[in-house]
Length: 326
Image 1 (cartoon, one colour):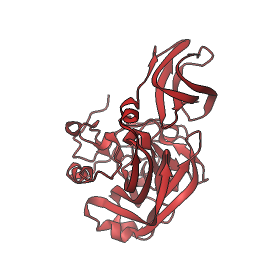
Image 2 (cartoon, helix red, strand yellow):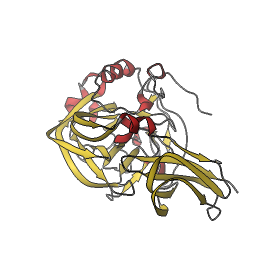
Image 3 (tube, rainbow, N blue to C red):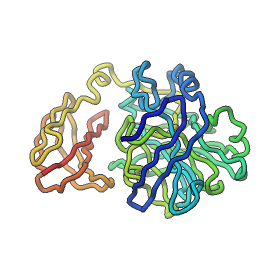
Image 4 (spheres, one colour):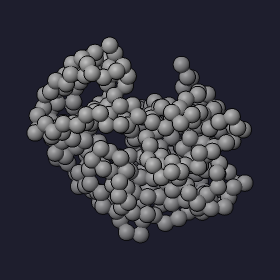
């Protein structure tokens, strides 16, 4: 079991994982009063912040903020999980579902990003933010907006690595979207985003990355753990869901979990379709349900492992994680 560190301290854990033979290693980072700055963000009611970054005293999960380094038979500075690295990843992003925050449609005018690693020795280049629409199966799809650029040299002198990426024209999104930082114009090992510690997260499949072959992958697929990235959209306008919708959101129960055959689903909201994904993000099953609330699914055909259910309702999308153990 990994040791949990103070949320005020950036640190890194030693582990070894991955589908693309990616690994990450330990590296100590200097203390940074991120939580104090986060409380300032929290006072901005128009900023979407995953609960994993919110202190437990404020009603959040209170995950530790970290930056993991990559070590693939190379020196420890071979790269960073949430930044430029030996794999030459192009973008890192955080996925948002508006129903989780009580919205059904918003416009975004800036992204607040927190960088935990900035190497002055590689100060050339620049980064910028993007916003993508999501496809029906939850993958990044059409590009909705590109922010202004910030040079690496300017980020080096930024206060505590916190930067704002502004959009000349506000971006309108509905239902779900992905915010990213484009790293393709900076040197390898130059910069990395802060993220939450291993498997301490707010939403399943929150963190994503674009590989150097321009394909998208969830962190759970790439690194085999869940996390949330420190990318916080700032809203210029938002349309709230009804009070009833907010109260009823996230109220889907599944049991037994783990299951060896029948999984029972009970929901307070009707859902119109559901999908089943394996641990790599591959879709296994998709069904239209015509607005039902209760369902029984026979999963006896699945092999042992972790899977995800995605429920699509009229004004919200919800995910549930379950295990098959025969």
